[in-house]
Length: 306
Image (cartoon, rainbow, N blue to C red; front, side, top):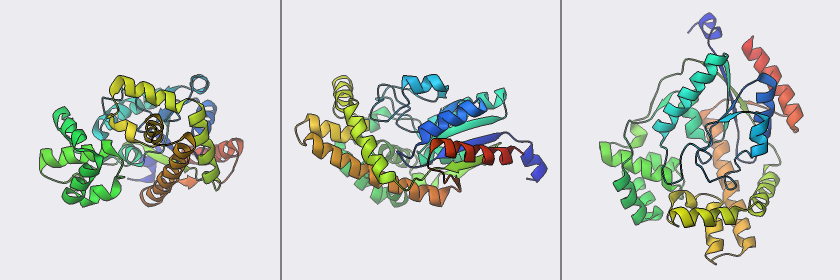
């Protein structure tokens, strides 16, 4: 593609970074400055009733800027990568029809890659019966089956990630071919400008975020989800909810649950940083305050638009 052709394309700003890095505040500031919506690319914020544990933007924050791609389904109706890409691309195209500039924000690397690099997941529809059978087997055994059938996918998927493990097995059993061998890519019809946050004080941010989630009602939210969907809901095995569930069951004290949640979040953030280094090439924003990051980001965007 020639520079002239590229310059005529819409520009999609991508704000990425590990959990607790400050993406929400900066995304809102960018949306306000550029008259944009914040398009969510956090895989757990796609679900209704999962607000506290996912650090979903609050009602007040949503009042500061329009947010899209939140609360798409109930937690017992998983959204696979192919479904998310179709929904997100439709929303993204609607935003680009309004003005040739849009903003994606999130830390779910595979979902970001699907949108920004045109990752094409296999067209295998959800299979509820198979998912129920896999859930009954339990996540440890499911991940072991994945390691045997698709080692490459198993290496990318965390052992506790039941949703992605089940999806990879679903594709494997439906097609007879590993998920890792079926993911092609077609570049999207827009330019992508990636901005990255990776603060040096991330460990402290994670500790503060974790304590804040528990103080804000994570355990009560988890209890409500269990009452409505059952303790076997796969999303309740994700970070925060799993520890809250253990506290509710009397298996851990609150302090133990918080400590384990912090530890798992630090490990997750480390994996996110590795993913972004290997699969993306963002311009890392060095400023520490949101105001400083905004000023730096706007300078980069101005150059990108020029």
